[in-house]
Amino acid sequence: MIIGIAAAVGLALVGSAAALGMSVAAKEKPFLIYEAEDGLLKGTVVSQGGEGFTGTGFVTDFTDEEDQLTIQIEAPKTALYNLRVSYRAPNGNKVAGLLLNGNPHGDLNLGPNNRFTEINAGKVLLNEGPNSISLTRGWGYYDIDSIKLQKTKPAAKHHITNQLVNPNASAEAKKLMNYLVKNDGKSMLSGQMGLDNIAFIEKATGKKPAVAGFDFIDYSPTRAEHGAVSYEVEKALGWHKQGGITTFLWHWNAPSGIIDEKGKEWWRGFYTDSVTFDVEKALSHPESEDYKLLLADIDVIAEQLKRLRDAHVPVLFRPLHEAEGGWFWWGAKGPEPAKALYRILYDRLVNKHELNHLIWVWNSEQPEWYPGDDVVDIVSIDSYPTPGDHNPVSNHYENLAALVKNKKLVALTENGSIPDPDLMKAYVVSWSWFGTWEGEYLTDGKHNSQEILNKIYNHPDVITLDELPDLFGMKREENIEK
Image (cartoon, rainbow, N blue to C red):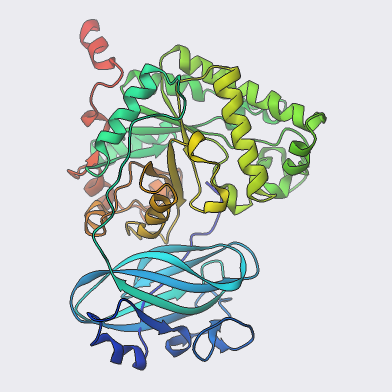
């Protein structure tokens, strides 16, 4: 989670006059192309200031909050279409918003590049007749050349096995993975970050989530030395006794180089802008003090993980999350150092500390950031769309499934607004679990209203704590105690 990050806004499809003429032949054409410069512009402008665009130009100046591009489309019948977007983002990593027929439809990650590049933007369910798709500013400062639509084909089958990457995986980890794999495509597990938030959900819905999320943040040595204390492991042990599934991430305060001044306080030490720690330099000099401190920090977290191991608690472990964003120090130097550090984490925790109860979750959809099939069990993404946007997040799902060739589970490990299970079915999206973030994302009534929480937590396609099988023998223990 990026603490305090603004949510991205919408994108909508609205077609040009030329495109409308093409719609009649939609059945015969493999795809339809809509040039951005033919769309409806609001605050944006057409430019020819660059190379590689198609048509007569591209749309730019996504700078103000209300700026957007809309393209009108006449669909011959109600159907799902694959959406692709050709864009350029010379100013770094960007996010655009999507609107479908005027309604929020998720966001679109735009990786940095200097050339127009076509990427998957997921599926759109178009109604017979007129439709619109819009790209909204989001983070701004990117260019759009065109969009492309193609009728969807039957979804590729998943070929997921329950084989974990650690050959010495514990019986508990194997049992949990086996359950997740068997459940894939049938239903989605409910999840919530922060054990203290579960009472709110239970009061609102009568249910508890199946998955609870915890954070090793305050076990980081550079936080502990400032007096930070954590009871996350104790909370996780208690959750396990309820029969729930446990997931951990680690907002890792940098091992050194904490700036600790106004606006860059010590407790912000996982942010790139609040530390001077250079992960690339540290990894390039194994003899350095910073490298040794990296290993020492990992060893501290290993001691906490051993407490969970010894209590037979399998952990969905998600280290180095959101690395590709660059806002955390472990991703600030690009993909190679981040992947190298992930592999060091895996090697040290698995081979040195013999932590075989971990199921390894990677948290990026971008291929250049992927550390490898041999050290990843599950792939995931974090999604924070416009408040109240319950789209199925199909573009991120499909990118992750393609990244691992449909051979690994795909999870929505953090979210603001929760995807609507009915839309997930319509869009053929099967997240293994979701994990709603804390604070306003759960309680403000805008990201997730009382109505939507009740719908999701009582939906037949969503698994809650009471619907989990007795994976860890906790229900048997309760019966014995009674």
